[in-house]
Image 1 (tube, rainbow, N blue to C red):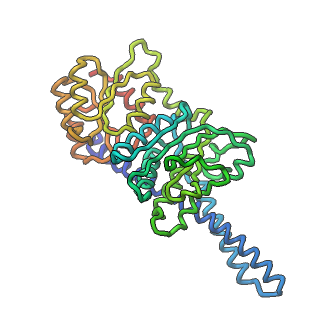
Image 2 (cartoon, one colour):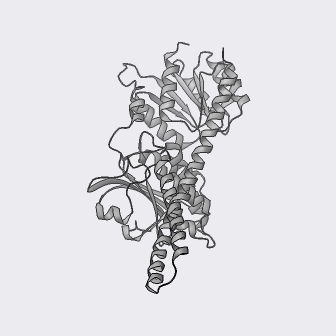
Image 3 (cartoon, rainbow, N blue to C red):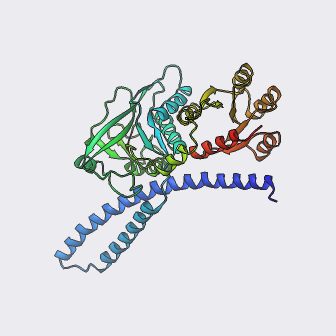
Amino acid sequence: MANPEDAQLNDRRRDDATLECNAFRALLLGVCQNLQSILTKVDSYEELLLDEMESRGCDTTYLLQEQNELRGMARLTNNVLENIPAGGGPRVNLATLLTGVIDRFRKALPPEQRVLENLTPELYVRCDTFELQETLLDMLERFSDLSGLRSKNWQVILQQVKLNRNEMGILQYSGGLNSVSAPKDSESEFCVISILPEGVAIPELRKLHPFRELLADASAGSLPMLVCAKWLGAILNNGARLYYDNKWPNQSAVIYFPLATEHTTEDEELANYSVADEPEPKTILLVDDEDMIWDVISDMLQQLGYRIILAGDGKEAVQIYGSNPGMIDLVILDMLMPNMGGRETFFILKELDPQVKVLASSGYVSQEEIQDVMDAGAAGFLRKPYRLADLARKIHEILATKA
């Protein structure tokens, strides 16, 4: 019989490897897209040089050999972009996701600084939720640090636009990575996220530059090269394209997502765990200090038919649970929180109700701490970041088990 401790250790190693793989994939995609762009430009310059040398009767053997090598490298980078598995994910409401990111960003702002939002509701895209959240938050934080003025204010705008083939051509939006998500019709609907300094108008299409150009910008005060590459790759990995306003090269980002209309296999998998038709909805207490976690996960769980109560830390969770005896069917508990950590919260909840069902979750917690709460009766553990379908499946399994 398999040792539960060995199984959990293997799960942790697998999850850690997945995190590292996702980070490396994003970086590789960003570097390859930039390299592909550079190789294309060099090839064009060599074509001009080759024509000039041939017209003068010069020996072009060496140049032809070099051009073949460059084109071989271009084919290699193109194969990488086309064949790396895309992150994908379920349909996610971008307005909900952005609300969590903005709320998290606001917490780190000084009192004199603000971020404004103008978010069109009910715009859905397919994405790796956690990867996109962390990327957008990192953009806001780094733009703010590079502004030079700590009082700089920001705006985040989400809108829906329709582009024709010519406009998509301006954006160089076609084929390649995540070709399933790429638009194929003469006109296509897009969700557009614009992160800009306050007062800056949303740039016209022709004033947008591909974000990969910033990889070559080594000027003082510019974004680090690896940061640009990681952002670029993360956005590519989610079937979107990343640009910047040429007037604000290190303080702006404009992201074009194809509007998600068709359902994916992960959407169908999520739907398998729906309890919306049950006469009495189950109540879940979601305990997490991250607003980004609250918004997307609570939205998804409510769509599946659960009633959600939110708690921002362990003390609030204990108060809510104690004030609602017999009313909460499951507690989803983050292990790392301020004021009162997940482990302490768990044991207080067990004192209040020995039959409490707790699904522990965290991205950074020791195996010993996980094992401690599991041995004490936690119903399960999920390491962040997890797929929403995995969370829905785990909840379904726990609630189907009698205490």
